[in-house]
Image (cartoon, rainbow, N blue to C red; front, side, top):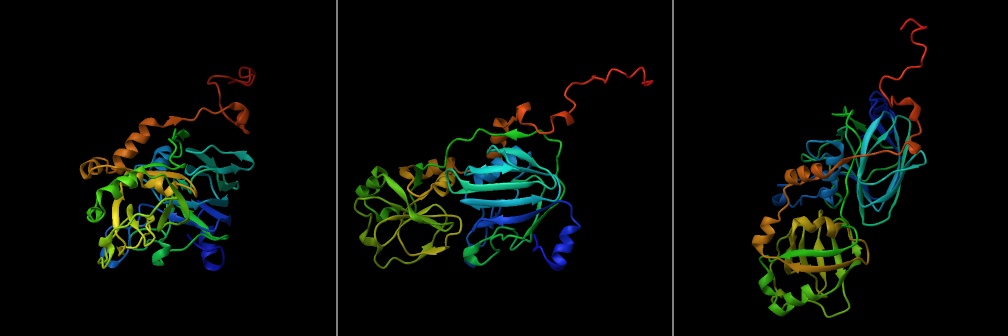
Length: 355
């Protein structure tokens, strides 16, 4: 990934598989699975706010494992292809088109050389993902190309940036689509007990599961605040509580007694008491809940949480089983006459031409 001027632009021009950013939303970053294993250095894993969206992209693109994609935080941008590129649109649905032709979400598309892909605002949810079948060539920082803005790793994309790609592993693969269940409008979040759950009495824990919350306006890749009109959730044991390790999914109770769900770029140490942890399978739903989305907690046991722990390879295999080839409407194919639609058809004068 390079800037579009000077030596970098010259290097980019040598590579036909490139994508130029013409305009861009304010918080578009490259994201993959993040950087596990750096908590001792004070660095949370980071990576995609909705990792399920990258698995969905891998399923429709026929990839063996998820690759990095562009995480579009509420708004996309305009991109011009320097070569034919196969892409997937997953995550929060957004308004998208290529040269005026509207694009369906949760499926693969071709962006031909010279064409412009335009992605507007999200119609639901928070994070859309633009992923390519060709591997994105982006610098690795601690083993990952993901931007972790809270830690100062990487940066947002800007107009004029050029993304470079390696070869598409299977350009002949048919266009694939997925039917995706709604996880963009709030709903139920399963929460498991953690090491500090016992600091809250049974009535407080029960009331947590009985309360209708709304996602508050305070939210980003580090975490999201939940609001409700009733009394806060507190514990006398919070006084003098020693800071402890925290991670994505942990539900902290801030000083005003409102829950705060930690997300991908959360800190690694926190002093607020944690009533429990949203299980990994429900992190995508939490991350994708937009402002005002209704949310409720549902307690599960630690054993249940372990059984529900996401297995990316098993999830990818399951997604592949549900993927279906796209059946295109001939009326929407601008270059229909360029396709060989029926085998064996001739112009009728083959014998006259000696064929």
